[in-house]
Image 1: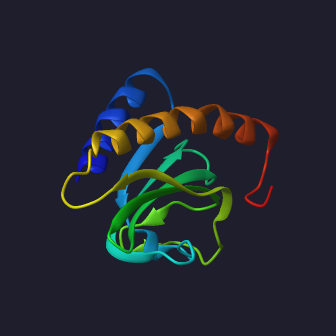
Image 2: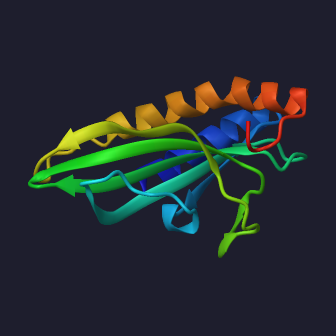
Length: 145
């Protein structure tokens, strides 16, 4: 829920100062991604997309929680896609192209996870994707780059 709220806040800020948009609230199961080997997914995930409204190209920031033994992990992966997902799943069968593989954002055990770290990583990831998206759109890039 924290990422969804952060996504709404960033979308509001971006809409006031640029053409970029952020949509939040998707699930990683909508995309054909493989979770890191040896990690058991625990059913908590989130996907947000960074896009320009007049272009199909977008960047998707995936977060997925998993466990390895008694330790919990929250992972992030960034993909480039050609169509924004619909409410009930992707609008296209075209696979997302991974541009940044799964990386651990947070390790935790028990109920002591500081999810503020994930929200900061989310904001940082969006900030990194904005110039990348602008460059891709200006160069006429397609998904598989």
